[in-house]
Picture 1 (cartoon, helix red, strand yellow):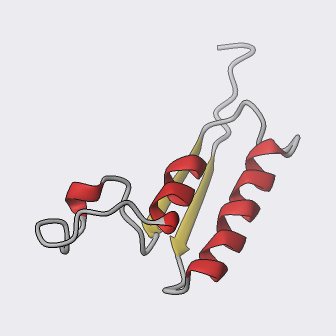
Picture 2 (picture 1 turned 180 degrees about the vertical axis):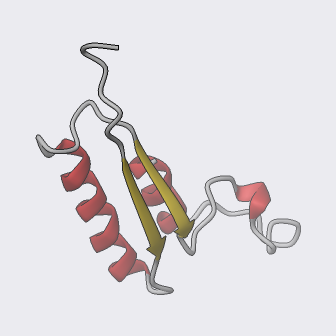
Picture 3 (picture 1 turned 45 degrees about the vertical axis):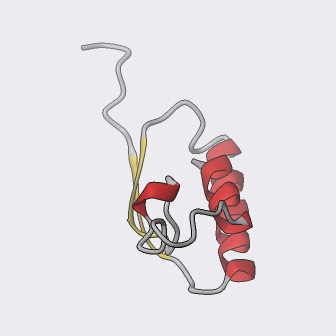
Length: 78
């Protein structure tokens, strides 16, 4: 079909265990997303982000149901 691009981007992530290093990754991802090369194109990102999106997904949820700064940062980037 004319006018339809089959181009997409795929990234694989293994994020750091350290919050400050993950913040750098989140900013890099945001920068890529906003770049002209990525703009308006599908982008699949797979991997281990060393963070959970939902508090219920964390193993400590039953005993310590707190929302961390790291989780909020991850939710913002997703």
